Length: 257
Image (tube, rainbow, N blue to C red; front, side):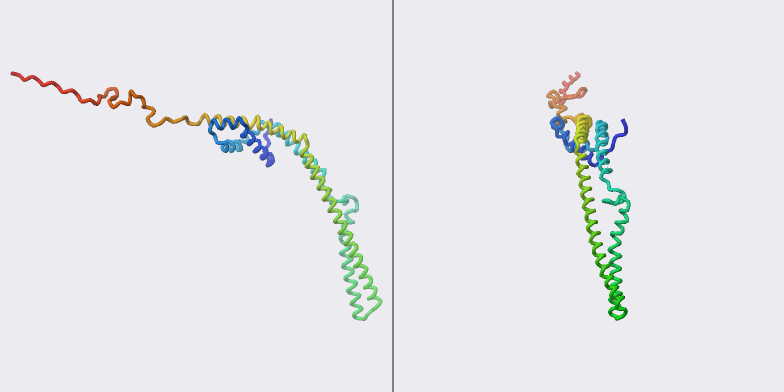
């Protein structure tokens, strides 16, 4: 077996839910009541033991991660836009048309402003009236061209944005559908079942057993070690020690004649 896969954010959330399900099971709840171990402490221990519990379901997790990665990667490559830009710009010559669509209104507006300025300037100076009329006419024509090309460019840009937005929405829906496929859901459920049965549950049972074995037994009350009536009397004396009664008086010695 290879190196265990580290859990990401999504897998960590699934791990936490699986841990809560095992702790809430009747078996673990019954053992917690008997042992007196707090459920919150057991959950903290379970969350900290990811590296010890996940290897039991490593094969199922690898299969689930491979299917999920394949589904996301396939949809990403299928729905990614071409390098030349959105819409129909991947066709030959589309880039030149896009540049012209942007530059034409600008150049036409600059030309219109120049011609109109020169034409009306000559009219005010009352010089070269024929040339002034020509410049004014060309200026107004350039202004019309600038307005029309600007409108066409705006419409084309709007259509391209709408088309790209629709393509992105389709790609997102396809990605969601692929991530919700029965094969992927089955692989995820198989991993969670193996994680609960072979990883989390045995670990929690060992934790409860160790906590129960290391818990101190019921303490004896004060004086309980020496509560036998044979050792509680006031006249008790230990071996080699005299009792509490006073010694008997000696008889008087007889006097010599």
